[in-house]
Length: 391
Image 1: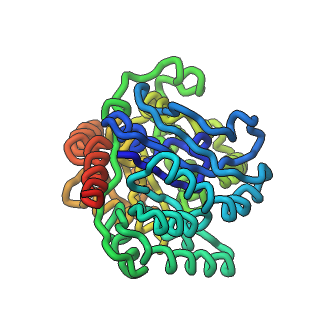
Image 2 (image 1 turned 135 degrees about the vertical axis):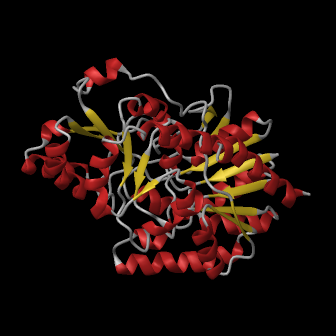
Image 3 (image 1 turned 180 degrees about the vertical axis):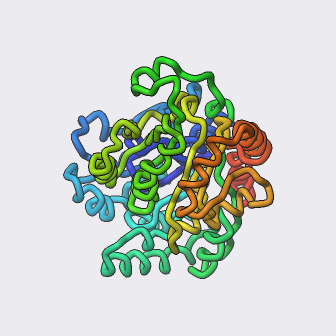
């Protein structure tokens, strides 16, 4: 098959994500894979905004042809200009590469253009749905505009593949024709338990005595990390060598650093900013426990963050707030994740670090994701859906 994947992020600068796993696995299975993105100008060179042949990030022998949407290379204007250039660019791509099917991840910038181009070319569109996009926007006027985009786009997709039952229901509420669920995945050959990385431990100024709890991922307003930071003075009364390792970056990173400074706990918190995806197991090797303390809101309760799959595959026990999306993939009765409300994290962290059976949670979690949630299985299920449309 000739498969085209379309997104509205910068494919190269985006943190490693489902688009990278699936596109590269599709190519390893013998398909011709093309990707359209929207380059983020930033401080990039011309090379970084040009098309890229044989792109791969995760799987060495994979090959994706990356096609960059023509944009005005100025921050902010790149997205606006892409809205107007996408239709012709996508239409030409469909024709030039004899595309059989389109897998679309975006809504706002180029979904309308994709729908028009594919309809004219009689090419099926499958939309992959993770988020209610308008819920991610604070400004009311923009929120309403994006909701209109969603309401107009979803009925036009030939199929929607949601990652949780909640996103399936929401897609159906948007009048989608046909919606199925395929959860996210993990590659247990990449995300795997490693011996403690002593060099990394030294570089991060973590001692052999430190009891490390790790947060992985983007740092945003609903991360729950301010609550964790404020609980550290009490945690260290019970666990004197406690240390929080925050692996990730985002808009609220500086705010967290300021909180830790005001609390006088800088020596108890290590901030790394973003790290390469393939290095995540090294950081996991330093942690006894990983946490996902997301605040539960109308937006977050739908989520099942893919980082949870990665942490479990690395053999780490995970303490998480009970997001409904997570409860679908990891039911409470499965005892794979340790669930607690955010206000209980302080006592749960103390209790778990004193639990001699903590490592067994990690071993069980890895076995569970290996058996149920691999990117290999996810890729095969997507390809089966594609074949259904083409046959």
